[in-house]
Structure formats: structure tokens, C-alpha cells
Length: 107
Length: 119
Image (cartoon, rainbow over all chains, first blue to last red; front, side, top):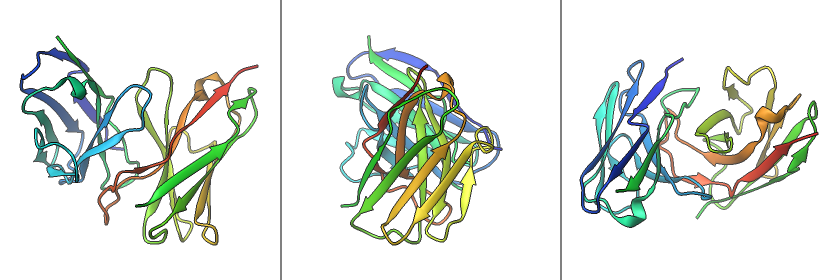
């Protein structure tokens, strides 16, 4: 089965910083990758699908890129409300594995 | 706007069977895979398995021996059973429609059901 590995596992950044999270698949998954944001005690929220398509209503400071095995989620200017844990998920085939998550907080 | 509403027992004893149901309101039920996902306290998201309206299932290999997912198309509902639970199965369980090879994820998730396994 394909494994999904995120890095880093956590990061601290200042308001306004550019933040980059990486997700690597152990085998190629084309662009069948989604990114989710989860705040404490809340249901995960879809941010991006098809590796780079922004879900409706998601702020444009979020962007995604990549294809094959290497993917990136970027927050262009970190805001206080972006404090959360971010997960990637492959969905090309089962099992629809998640990455282990990246916790983002404010420095 | 599709809504997923889930319910089931929240407190179990070791060796019992976890049982949860998720109802899909509004929108199409057929043509998609419907998933169960869980999150243990302080941990990440774990995909448990999925079913489509025709009853085709896929399971996480790590849980496959204990998981059964079923569907009731007359009610637009799907259910999860996890047998022989232990404390390690304590988690918040979500139903959701995530993406599959033919459809991108729409971001439809249930509200989550906390399940505690304790003697």
C-alpha cells in the first residue's frame, strides 16, 4: 500500500510568514491528492483537491502544487486563524491514506 | 448542500462491537464511495474503509479482520461495525465522502461520534 509522509510534523511561524508543508507518496498518485485543515475539536475542512484546486470559499492565501509523488501546501501569508493541523490524503485508490499531519502555530 | 448525520453508542466495554450509522441527506447517494474515518485522542486521521451504493467495500488492511461496512440504499444510510474493540479503538469516528478515482472530494463530513472503550 502507498504511504503518505508529511513534513515537518510541526512548525511555528510568525504572522505574515510564508509557510510550506510537504507531502510525499511512496508511489505515484498522479494528482489525486487533497489537503485538509483541522482545528482543535472540529471536523476536518477540505482546502484543496486534485493537488492544486482550491475548494470554494477557501482563502486564496492557500495554494497547492505537485504531481506524482511530491506535493506542497503553501500558506502565502500566515494568519492567526490558520493555526491548525493540516493533513494530506491520497484518493486515487483504496486505501485512501492520510499523512500523519503537520501542526502549525504562531511564533 | 449534502449533510451527513451519524449516530451510535459512545461507550463500550472491551471485546464488544462498535456500531455506528451515517445518514446522507440531500444530494445523490449513488455513484460515490462513502467512508468511515477515525481519530484517536491526540492522533491523526485514520481511514477505516468505504462502501458504495452497490455494496462494494474497501477496508484499511490494518483493521480489515474486524471491520464490516454495510449500506442501506433505501434509507441512504451506511453503517460501521468494528468487532472485539479494545482501548486502542477509543477515538472520534467520522463518516465522510472523500475522493475516489472518479470523483474529487466534496468535503462532506459527519459531525463525529466520540467512542470510548473502557471496562
